[in-house]
Image 1: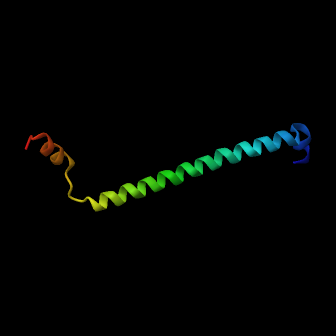
Image 2: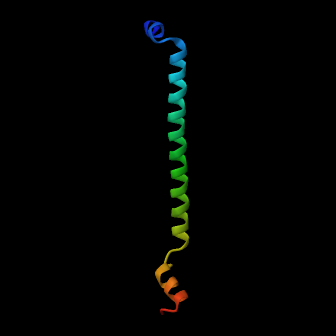
Image 3: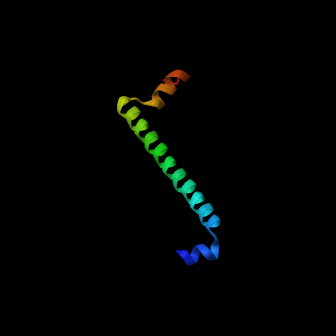
Length: 64
């Protein structure tokens, strides 16, 4: 590691480290948001079992 620091420079290593932290942290936040969205959709689906949206729209349009 010491030879790498001399070749690249400590400032460049710190810059690379910060960029990697941003990239990895951003991906973790995205995964968390996706997981929360999936959980809320599943919760809504469980509450609305038996609901037929096509039939409801046809009723509004007067097709039934």
